[in-house]
Structures are given as C-alpha cells and as structure tokens.
Figure 1 (spheres, rainbow, N blue to C red):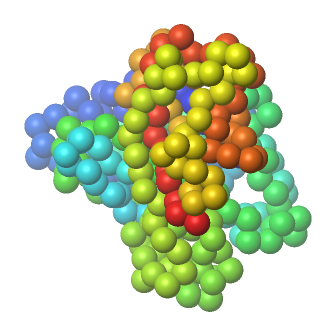
Figure 2: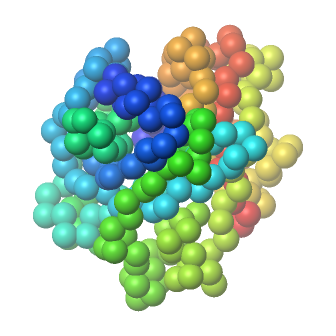
Length: 264
C-alpha cells in the first residue's frame, strides 16, 4: 500500500476556516474523491480542483477526540462497478463554502510516483482500501459530514469485506461480530531510537508481530522539516516484524506519527 504525504488544507480551505471561526456555521464536509494525476507537492495547497478525478469515495461520520482536538474521518474506496483499473495519486476532501459552494478543502498525495494501483472489479472483486484521516480541529463538535445512504453497507456485503472495513461507526452494527476496531496511538519516532547500522526502527518491544498488526503514518502536526525527513527516509514495513526499514536517509529529527494497532 502506498504511503500518503503532504496532507494539507488548500488555500480555499484555509479561507473557509477563517469564515467559520465564529462557530455559528458548521464545517460541512461533502465528499471525498480519488485523483489519477500527480502534481508538484508545493502546488497542492493552491489546487481548487482535484487533478484527473477518478472516483467518489464513501465517507463515514467523524470520530472525535476532544482531548487532543482531533477528528478522525474514515474514508472508504471500493472497486464495485469500476470497469477500468487506474493509479491513484491524490485524495481530495471537499467542503461547502457559504460563498463559493463546494470547494476542494484538503488534499493528500502519495509519496512515490508509483501511486496506489486500483484494480477493476473484474480483476480483483471486492477490493477496498480504508483511510482514517486524522485532522486537527478547534471545534470537532461543529463539523458535519454528509454520509450518503449508499455508504451504509448491508450485512451481506459486509460479510465479504469485513476484513478491510473496520473502525467505521456507520458499519459498527454490521461488523460488530466480525472484527475488532484498531487502536489509534499518537507517538513520535525519536531520531535517537533508529538503529543507524541497519537503518531500522523497531516497535517489537511494545507491539510484537506475533500479537499485533501495525501501520504507521506521519501525523498531521508534522512540520515541513519533519515531513521532509519522513519522505527522505523512504520507509517500508518488515514482513517478519513490526519494524520500519529506511531505504533513504535515517531521519535526523523526531517525527510525530500515527500508529494503528490491531490485535491478532
């Protein structure tokens, strides 16, 4: 699976935040889209539309953690009805602006030029990917997510997809007996904790691979320098343990990350 980087608000998104600062009008997130074109990372915040839009994705209602002023937004991609495969490079979040209408509010892009391969339904039936976007907000309670009825899966469909469709409140009834929700852990990859000799970072002490599955993504609080360090490290996960391997330069700065921990 591709690593997603440069998750940011667009300039129109920043302008919308300023308009909504009074708190009288909620932020309304309207949809998520996949994009099939890669752009220069420095141009992401200037985008007003997603380059080469491919699919509208399924939104689920937000999960809030008011203790750290953070909203988690589950987004689901499936290839149901997809007639042609494509490579996905960008992920766009749209919101309702009171003056402009629907705008591209936030955008993220894959770290590598290979992108994310999305197969046609005939190539790989019931293919799906879920992202849990962690977004810092000042007032999580004043956010509305427009969840279409089509985003609620029936039990029959959930039976086929439950292994990949977890941690979504709208699926909780269908999946209650099928899967455990992952635990989200906010932590920091300390620069001093990397093994400089083999360029690895181990989570095996806290989360041994025989007991836990682990995924790692940079936190939205990362500074530009921290994101550059993460991107330059070109990290991949080990197939034999919960260990990160850097094929680029080992980060020389501490990097805030989000761990999704699932018990086996």
